[in-house]
Image 1: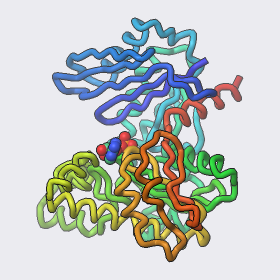
Image 2: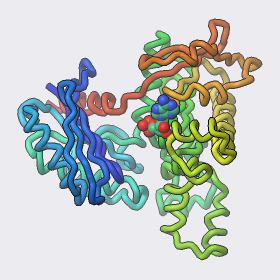
Image 3: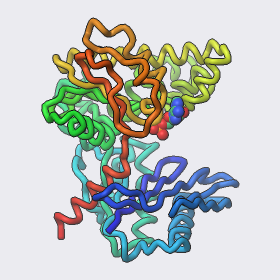
Image 4: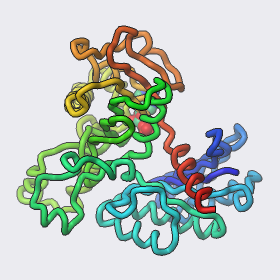
Length: 394
Ligand code: AMP
């Protein structure tokens, strides 16, 4: 039996059908440019890619086309799929484990949209459409915040008026939890140790860091929303909250415009005009000073978190890079950990430069801290969580 994983984001929907035991991907696809005249849906199945280009009015239309393409390719979703796993970004204080979706749960996820206005609404749309398409299959929500629900209070609490914080559910929730949990477990398996003190650096278009002690997170860089922390593709990460008031008062910007600025026009995009790391690297190679500064700001922030988490953990056993940038950009890994021999962290240049899709060690044999690159697989983690919940309910 397989699990269909749906990741319905703001401008795209990713879907993948996979075997939750072996991890083999059976089919996968992407709905892109939703709401634009030239939208498209791509499907990869049996080593063949099919693509449909047409106007895709909304997530519902896109997913419906995807389901039709799967059926046309001969995939029997109705009979072969044991569960549909949905990535849901914000679970608030309510959801901290995979949850079977019924109308009540869907309403609660929708109600959490005030905490995640950019993320939860498209998640809800994806769930609604998938439930219409596959009404007889259990649907499971897997939350990005869940892994960090048990953060120590000192790490999850903002130093603001506690009554205001309580009234508005303001705390540090953390995100990318599925990835941090999956990757840290892979590291523990790879090194054959459960009691590891580790730092996981999830560096993709969104980016976050976590400090994990024996499988439990003790700190993470994202907060109430996925805006806090590291410099990202289009998000600022940490910023003095005074900037927000300043923009409101001095630039007369509305709150939605500030939200858009910090979430979509900041980070690498704001500094260098591009959010894609490969493009950034090309601009650096071409001598673009803005791109070079963007890289330096990115690395500076990353090192700040690595240093803080080393102290948090006391003893550090492993640092792991994952996601698009973390898995591929050797220059980021080298710069992030340059000159840390005194702390027992030593990257091996050749190992770091070698390209591979497998989990691997890139530190020297003498390095006290093991540095790794481990590909993340959020879809597999969601599929496994969904399958486990459905089996336990049977
Ligand atoms: P993700 O969000 O995990 O899909 O990561 C997307 C980011 O990874 C984008 O900024 C890509 O430019 C970056 N990325 C993907 N492949 C490479 C590569 N070979 N070198 C550098 N960055 C890459």
